[in-house]
Figure 1: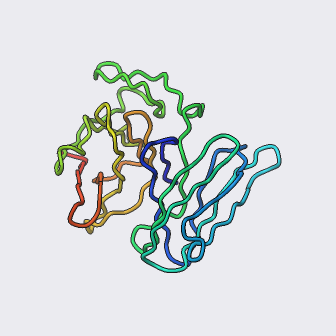
Figure 2: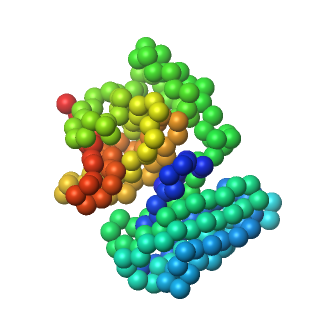
Figure 3: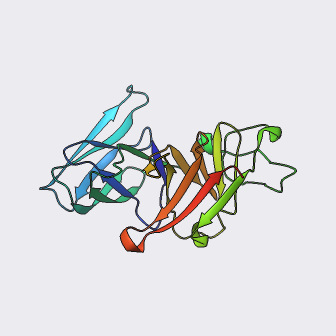
Amino acid sequence: MLRFPVGERTPPTLRCRPLFVCDLVLEPGESIVNVAVGDSVRWLIAPARSGSASDVMPHVLIKPTEAGLHTDLIVTTDRRTYYLMLVSSYSKPMLRIGFMYPHDPQHDFATVFAGRGIRPSTPMPETAIDKLEFNYRMSGDRGLQPVRAFSDGTHTYLQMPQGMSDIPVLFAVGSDGGDTLVNYRFTGQYYVVDGVPASIALVEGSGKHQRRAIITHGN
């Protein structure tokens, strides 16, 4: 599941495949108050819930009826308001997305990566220092390149510059050179990617205005 930081100034974009359902997952225990979509004719929106009565997980189920649609979605709950942009496309659909919450105990950091000068104040999985590998090279748009990249054999970490205003979309690059979806989260300065892809792309914009940075594992 792709996760976006909650409360960002730039609304995340959710790409849904026409006539397929996308699942927008909210915070456990949160209650949906209202759902409003700009194009209520060609986008079908339905609140839903999963889990037990003591641990309810709220969802918003989203289905576009045709390709090439663009609209916005606003979801109000008893805790906050979510703003999203919706796009219907056969290319790179996002079947399930969620958010990162600053008080989530899973994102509490106490790990210090001593000896490398890395003292992250943001959450990452705990790992042994001797498992860290920094054998990465970078190419493409310098404005999108991370400060450093490293892995622990289970996750890949990209440390981004301080004060980044926009968060590029992250893809793994397949053996055919195409972008493929991979589970990751962005928290603080860091992308935390599940697994160790051979190559990762950070992408901003689309078409002729697209910017890309490539992070490749190995010399």
